[in-house]
Length: 239
Image (cartoon, rainbow, N blue to C red):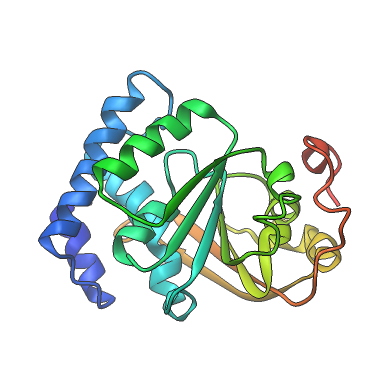
């Protein structure tokens, strides 16, 4: 998926990229490749692959569940790594107020430089483990949307993300193929943490057999204060 095909594919969903937005994605790609020589951000470096497997993949929740992103929404991206999925979404939705939580300083340095290069406002970077962020009074239950992509299996991701999600807000999980088993396994965790599965969408990336699953979890009640558990525990002992 080269940049031209990327733009045409988005136009099918009603997103006509401006010249400025096209430039932002081009800058994003160049910055990613440049920084990746110093810090391992991604193993995918071919331009067509980055546009498909990082940029387009990140935007799929916006394409499939556009109503979630309408208005002046706040979004927290947990373990965003190189800024996926939140920053490609932000390029298309400039009104979104983004907070990115990541535990690695080197990645945050990249993101800080990238946000400046892309001239994005309303983007806050937080150096923290997800478990600690969930107990930070400035972050806990403050966000309309919380995203997680390639972070952890669903039961663990829920413990990272639902404490940050407002009641009536949504966790948006970007998963790989056939995530139904993982979802079934996480049913108890989601319920304990105050969530309820609202929607599941299976899709394939354009002109490929690459399968993806989007899971939307509605936050229906407050997360008990003891969650998330201390750093490392959710992964070692999933709910």
